[in-house]
Length: 67
Image (cartoon, rainbow, N blue to C red; front, side, top):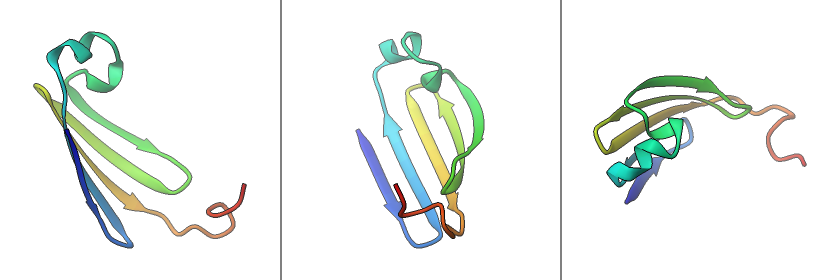
């Protein structure tokens, strides 16, 4: 299950997953992770079978909206 809410500046998502997923990907390993992408800085915490992600969106400039 994945639920998210967002506005122009922030993004918050809560995900629940099966315990078996922990062995398939580092994304689901317990702990805190922080990463930067072109459009946001994201903080993620995994506890048990719950993952909570909080992102702060960056000003786009020329990067966003171009392919």
